[in-house]
Length: 130
Ligand SMILES: [Zn+2]
Ligand SMILES: [Zn+2]
Image (cartoon, rainbow, N blue to C red; front, side):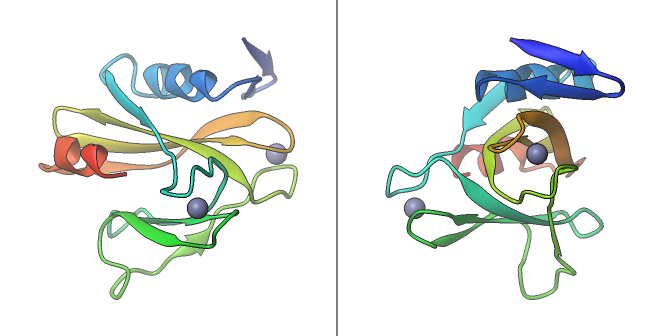
């Protein structure tokens, strides 16, 4: 279930991230993957550089870093932080035909949002290995 508070949307489960991306993309985003680390962890630290189309996630449990999209070496990454100040997220990524989306839900307050989206001809391929 999602609830609106002003401009923000809060969710109580990871599934709400998908709905957030559906709304954000006005329905064009239709394929989703809920991100799970190899260790089984579902909470991540997230860094994004929208200009270069780069996103990196770091697992809270095992600290393994994984590139969701882009090239870490050339990116100007910014650490994502929720409005509440927390930086621990459940992630669900999405793809439209040629567009890639990084959605997240704050583990602390439940705020859901799209933390990055950009055009990518390889959006489906990116989604397959988030
Ligand atoms: Zn992990
Ligand atoms: Zn929060």
